[in-house]
Length: 205
Image (cartoon, rainbow, N blue to C red; front, side):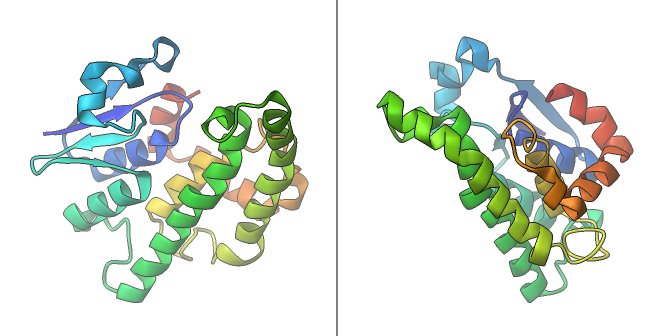
């Protein structure tokens, strides 16, 4: 059985939604970040990065959201959560997910995890002030050119939608002007009506 480690208010939501959509048996284990459970010796043996999500499989342990999402799509192709019949479309989905991971999430983290990059209070404050613009600009790129239809990949619902939904829930907290992100917000509202999302989302707020 798969073993999944997550924490509230984190990007682990995307993988959690994928696991639920697939319907495969798994054990979900919540970490209490307020007690620094992600830094406990027990968890660091699972994921030395001290972050979530982490997925324990029969072959080993995986981390990083884009990798976990693709692994689940490939392991459970019958779920239809990726365009696996097209190498190019799958690469496009991965490009989108990696953009969320490497650019959008990092922009958000400058508000809540600034000490990863700086110690000086002035530098930390400057990073926080930049977040509404950096997050807004990154999401505007999605709004204006990366959403192909009702779903990220067009007509097919994929794990990219779960990942976009996860990050779109951070926009108000990052003081982003959502009036310029009508399609992203429409996507977010559509996702909130999904029964699986309704079931898992309360674990992350």
